[in-house]
Image (cartoon, rainbow, N blue to C red):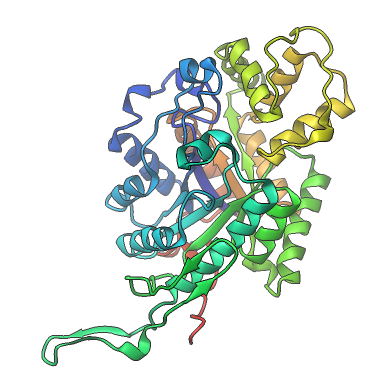
Length: 435
């Protein structure tokens, strides 16, 4: 079983997790805060730390500025610092393929792979918010299909740049004065729909050959991209077991259809456990998260994902909405809301309560370990992306209370066996296109 520890909101997996007991909101720009997180995850046998990111402040509504911890360090500077306090855990950061350039990304992630001795990964996102577009000279985001075409081309260019140098081409010889073999350098000369990139990259081929590509996205475009290129995919984790098995098989079959092996694409459903000594206590801790979330903030979160300001809608009358227009934002969240409203009747207050609670899996350590073991052994997951309801408390509790149960059951290795991220994920090292 492969475990990755995700940080998006620095205080935990909800808009207001920073308010929970044990939180350290004053430390969110301190390297020590993230060092503690990384060391705890590594001690517990997590294969990777996944640092999620966005390129904007959520200020569409005043509640987002007033109540949400929007501020966070830049990913690659932070992960570079974490190479000094960790030895085996992978270090993965979000890269927006809509608001970055392939050459910069190839160089950033390549440098991290060298600094970490082969532990770097990157998480491809296409960005979903107009707020991000306005930070890069646009009025609104690219449409969904165009973002994914750009993302696919972005991957091709980055992979090409990482193959700029043959292994052994850079071999400094002080006596002769020869630094590199020109025959071992390759110029990419890429020209496509979105990018024109000559190359070569001013870094040798990275220790892992290519860094592990993570991706999230359950829309048709997202699944197609994952099947072609991704090596680990984050998927929603709240579906009943039969639905989770179908989703797992869908991703595996797409990898095979793209000429890859099933094992070349790892499926890692999202999981946000909330632990308690009893089941009732775990549910009480979810109640606490809800109690710390103002109604206004929850309503604005729904407005954001539906693309319509709901501030004038009554909270306690039946909610009706026309989903025919679709969404240019996160398709998974939009479709999740649509399916709920199609299946049942909700007031707005009930709807955002359901959306909040479906993020979490409350239970005792044994119940959470049972759930994970069943999904793993029943062909619904290769592992899990853990996003904790509170940080650092949630990670520490999981490491101390759930991980030992998984190890005793034989579904989780007691420690990371390899020194590279590819090794710990069981993924092969790709050959250079010039080999």
